[in-house]
Image (cartoon, rainbow, N blue to C red; front, side, top):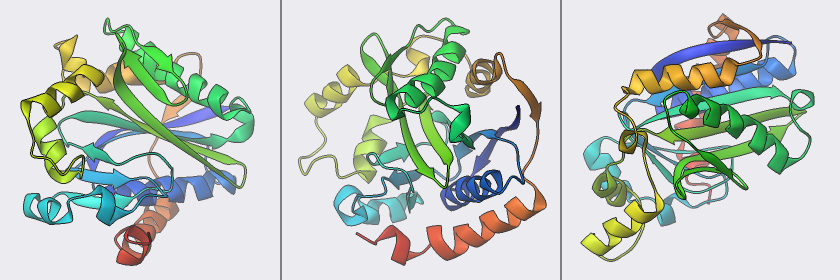
Length: 248
């Protein structure tokens, strides 16, 4: 089976979610090959898990002040701050038959591609079930998954840099004021590529690309015209809407 790989580009939060769903539909219908996509978030954004409350998890007023978009994902998991210069994100969309059947095993498979990419720039990472990747015991990547109509969508972020104060500003991490103690607590649990390598953000993408395509037949590709149109439709009608984003 040949994979389609879509190269890294900056995309807004609503379109990122729209693209994931549109590609799921086209892969489901046999109109597209299984797809690996890389992207960053421009502008910066907060995404919340499918079953979370936007009002509980996100400082909406602060996001508006900073021009940070807020969107609900179709996958589960927690609220994530996506700094446009601070990470590389991937999506994998494929028929279930191409991946291990079990949830944990499929996470291990795809996270292994991330781990392979990080190894190519000298970073020794490990899979931390059920859906994290760690370096020296600290989280460097969070991942989330959903399955629908026989199609798996897994997407995840790899932290390149981390602005903890900005993250605390847009997420309702705590009602307490940001303190040195709170920042230290995050630093003890989370790490970033720049702690281990001087590679550029684009260099991180190229490393990840090498890990994802290893031992696969693949071709670099783009969204089809139908996928692009459907992505725009979903971004506007669903992912920008308060009905979706504030549904809980």
